[in-house]
Image (cartoon, rainbow over all chains, first blue to last red; front, side):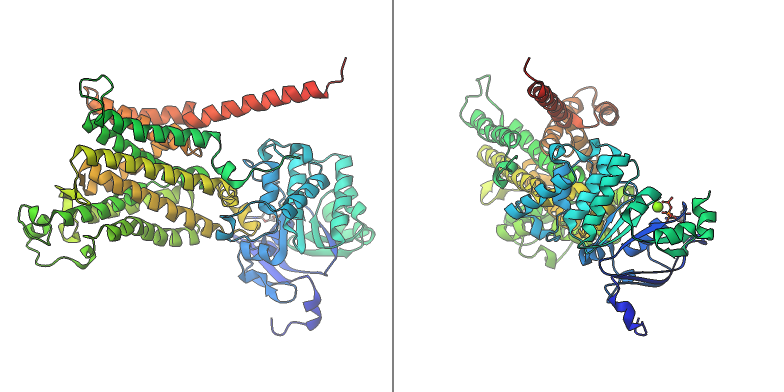
Length: 253
Length: 383
Ligand SMILES: Nc1ncnc2c1ncn2[C@@H]1O[C@H](COP(=O)(O)OP(=O)(O)OP(=O)(O)O)[C@@H](O)[C@H]1O
Ligand SMILES: [Mg+2]
């Protein structure tokens, strides 16, 4: 880390030489990726390209065999656990929507709300007015005010996606990792999600993984195509989608 | 917009108040029926029954402590009997030291079993137990410290699910083997017994039995309030989150192991209190209290009553133990374990939420349906 190029320290997230193997199979292979503060980056790539594994590495779920993962130029994420990384300001929406099924929509948001995470701080806790206002506004943003008391387990797939995005908002992270947010959504909902992510991106850095090319196009941001655990192409959506290798391994199938 | 209730109202909702009311009624009515009514009255409760009910209340408190961790945090302990027994031993040591010169060997310091084993001095870990406050501190500290150390290692290494259950079984089994040994210093397989008095009152006396019953009810009520306060706080929401999606909770930034360690240790202390109240009422504590089967039985009480409900754990403990008393005193005695196993299977298959869980689920469904109907009616335009 000491010999790191000082320019790289300005990056919000810096991955270099990251490799992960599962029983000899290289899910990530010498992956390099740099995301600037305030940037939104779309990640595409065929199934099994390593997109989710990359998010696992960033959030501390998977330890890489090799490589640097640096957040804000100073924190080496490969040495930290999930909770510490989350508290540094990295929030994640999972590919398979994971919400707390036995909690109401509102309680899911309350749990995600940026606040003291320590056990003792939560023993004597009752909702403050600003916190409740925040919940109200998130409920409105994700259009779930009317379903606030429903158990999250009873929601449809699309609603769970929205709830999880709401939880991300409540967390107020600096960097959002969003894995396939529009799977199971209608065209109208997909469009709304793109708008919402653009809105969020005004203040925060976002990395979004998605297969839906219409959605990626609607975002209008720099695209990285992963293949077999490393970067195949990077650039604007037009550059990447006309790249021959990208067409061969991904788009043209 | 729905305004939220104050924490106190959330903690003591209608169900909780009804439960506390019933405990209070039992705490008053049973001693009153024993002390005030003549034995000829049909409502008279004989003293042996007061002690039996007291025992049930202690079991109920043990079940409550299990429900707190299993029902709300998903930690299935198959070794909670160990914490119960440790609390019981701490109380037993106090009671032993109260015997003094009234023992068979009339040694003012050494309990009988030590004289019998030819010990000359009181082991250091028996020091201080003649003082009631110190012994009570140990009732909390012995199970609490064991749970803390156990939990520290287990939760930090992320041992969960069936693996955790198995090592809790191993823990109680190992303790049982230890306490069976004479040189362990706790009376070997005879355990601690022949108690004379507690705080200067004869443990066998009718009034003491009633006092112990009332004390057990108070302990149950207080622990219930603590559990309610915990599970209705944000801490409680985090516990349920851990139960249902542990790794998701970590990704929100919660340090899961701290939450588990806290609630696990608290639960062990409650089990210890239950054991401490149990010992003077049954008059003996021996290593069989550590038997792995006891811990499993306690888990069955919770499953029958309904886990994640608190009141269900109490109800389950009382019902199953009442059934046990009834069956083991009749010709069906030999079949009790089969019956208990059958009950567990039946509950798992046909009543997975347990008694209270099923009832409250049914009630909630009905209310939601009524709400929905009312909502539809309101939404329909006037004709
Ligand atoms: N825990 C694991 N153990 C073994 N193999 C794994 C594990 N996690 C991922 N893999 C493998 O690593 C490869 C990359 O998986 P990953 O989930 O990162 O792909 P992805 O790009 O997210 O694909 P998709 O578009 O289908 O979500 C896959 O071949 C997958 O089977
Ligand atoms: Mg994936």
